[in-house]
Amino acid sequence: MAQIFGSIAITGMLAPTDSADTFSVYEDIYNRGGYRTVTTNTDLKQITRPRRKLGMMVHVTATGKTWILTTEPHAWDLQTAPTLVGNTDIAPYAPYTGVGGDSVVANANATGDWTELTTGGGGAGDFTGPSMELQVEGIAAGSSFTTVPLPNMWDNLLYPIHFTNFGVTGQSFVNDNLILKTGDTLASNSTFEWSNYHDSYINPSGTPDFILEALAPNAADIGGSPLTISNPTFGAGTYTSANSVLSGPLTSAVDALHEFKISATSTTGLTLSKNLKVFWRTPFYIGTMGYGHLAQAFLDANPSGGGNIGGPPTAAAGTNTMAQLVGAGSWTFSTAHVYSEGSIVQYALDTIPANFDYNVWYPAPDTSGTYYGTTNAPNGNEHRCIVMDKSYFPGLAGGAFVAGTSTISVMFRDGAGTETTQTLFNATTVDANGGTFTDNLEWTEGATNYIGFESGYNSGLGAAQIKILSFNP
Image (cartoon, rainbow, N blue to C red; front, side, top):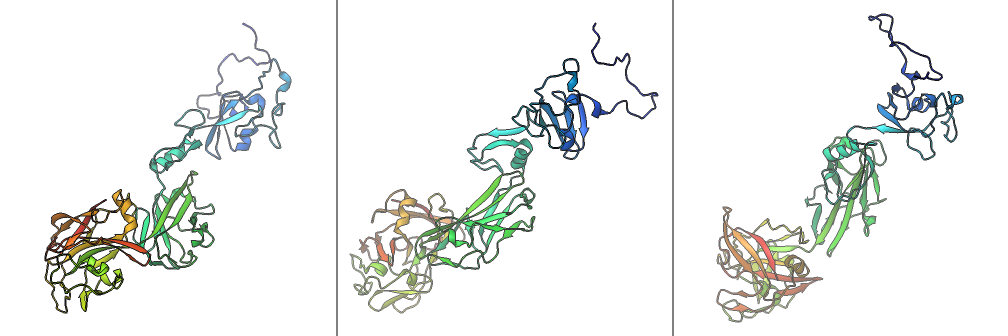
């Protein structure tokens, strides 16, 4: 066997002088390779070349991280290159500033590279992947990953931080939509409110903490949009903006959409956001007409079969308005004949087909209003009705409105909550004496083209509510 050049022979194991001795046998900082501990990253970088060995492991106590020397391109030993002992700045290695050594992070200049040791995965413990097709807990659809540390991935999966809601304080919003009637106003001092899971995973030290913005083409709705919401009290559960974020009152006389967005950055580097859509929609009118027809009110129509309805109407088209039909208003359908109506209600409904709520029951009580100046109009001699903006019908029905053909399927239920009758509302009705209104129930008021659907007399007698089941072209 050949003698090992440049070595000191040891013929037995190293041990202290006594088994009860508490002193160490050697100090790790003088070893070449193996495992050792240092205090800081600087100490790690300053480990001299002769004490480095590919695959050695070093734990840095200041950061709690452990590093492996994965690249050490300069091969040398005491026998072939004894003059290099102690030299920590050997070309082509780049010197560590001040002392010599390598950067902790990977580099491309042929210097030795230290790679962080992480548990739960191979290599550096980072994850790289393509864009996600679906949302998985706290990771949104469309997210992609480039060397994301695995602990961050677990945090995002197990502790989702997406926003749970985002809306306007005091307003009813569902599915991230706020539906207002045309003409309604969001006051200039309105505030936005939002909440999210796991506040501790939203970085409270960076600026901004939250970003509130109004989206194009209405970016001017919020002054200074995007607006920084700084220094919130984390852990509050629900956060509220200042009452001065809107640049002024917001309203619209026609269908309109204004969109807002809240966003933040998590401590794991993911951006989370939620949008709020504020729609202005022409209202739906749902309820009960008493002893009269929509056609009489808005088209000056008289049933073809005649009957005792006071003779041909003389009020010109346009005399009555939808506003007169609502609540305790009154409308004229024939000379000097005024009917007081108190059971038509207007609703702001989400007309996006995918969002339309077919589970809502609307009031439709029997009426006993004033008819021909006499109280207590004949109970049951009435029409249930729905009036809507014609432009909404194709999206909800999947086909164009056809006068006299298109219908709305509805269900009635009584005051005890028992479903009673399913029927169709249509645009051709029959009066109490057999006369048929052949007029197409379409009319224009202002900038809105209305279409009306109603039941025949006595349909739904005793019903207290109606529910829309479907729109049928």
